[in-house]
Amino acid sequence: MRAPQRIEKKVQEVASLLIPIQGRLLLAPNVTVAEIVPVSQVIPVEGAPAWYLGNCSWREQTIPLLSFEVMNGEDKPGVASRSRFAVLNTTGVNESLPFIAILTQGLPRLARVTEEEISEREDADNKTFELMHVSWAGEEAVIPHVEAMERAFLDYLHVDN
Image (tube, rainbow, N blue to C red; front, side):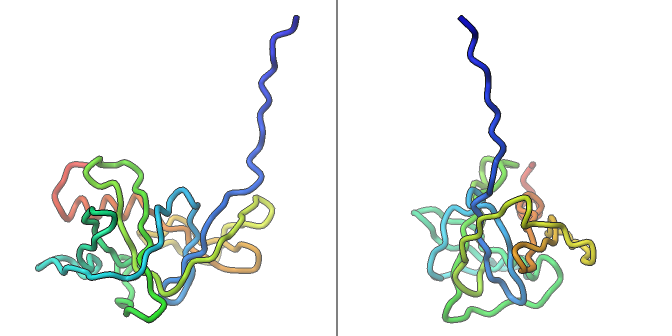
């Protein structure tokens, strides 16, 4: 009797979300996004950097609401009628920070990303909190650098990460 052989299956597509923010789209794998929720009350934090919009409540937890745009040196986005909070799973840099949220400018769309349809844009310089600029299925998007965002927040709090 022969031993079973291991069959390696190549990932065909990555279920992702195109998240509208001010002036562009973010592309994030579904596993990065815990939930998209309606805008709720934000409790400002006195003396916080401009990119730290305050704290919001989600599933009986207090999580920081960050502005991806301001973190990258751009103007602070406003809250529009279609705005939402995208609650993101963090990468585990520090267990005390399991989630962060960002302000969106509309409802995300499902994107089934395949290797054939996505390519890195060489014509764009990545800012600190941008992992990569990509073209996908005729759309331009930015993959956010979630780990850098959580490290910046933890540095602000002076928490070892």
